[in-house]
Length: 255
Image (cartoon, rainbow, N blue to C red):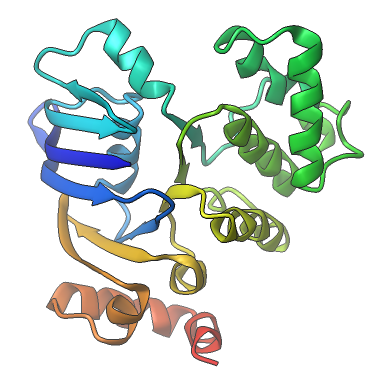
């Protein structure tokens, strides 16, 4: 479903991603973990060309783009293969929940407005917001806004959903409701790449966990291997520190 080769990204002289290679299978849930500022979100944004890679190729659902020769048409086609859930929701403040979800269907996929609104309503019901259709973002809690963001991504018809720290802006009371929607998608075998600090979610849901540091993939493997038997020293240190900071989260996953 996703194939990334030799992907690098520089901001001025700062090398944020250094020759990244990885693949994601159809229906696989891949969770990317690691210290803050290590390139995780930049990697995710490069997959959707929200950031333009400095070098490398990205292929999603058979659509391949080489950064050395990428055209705007190729980038547009690549973007259609995935959808993005942002940290800060990024909803249109002047549109209702229903309109936010329908917008991409109307403008990108050229669905008739009535059909797009019906489609959007169905998806909002799936994420538990059937009674919030006509409310604006300012009238919704953070958790509800993020669920609108996920509904918008679900409506986008892409093969892959990319989640960039989807709970980082939420108050603790709203985190579980967002993770519950993501877990439901995982059960449905929706292909997902998730950048998160939610270690319990990673351990419960991920088919594969990637640990990044310094713009590199240091180690990757099953959730069980990464959390119970990491091979690299830095992975062991990161997992141990995460466990120390939130011991109940990881302990509960072992029950």
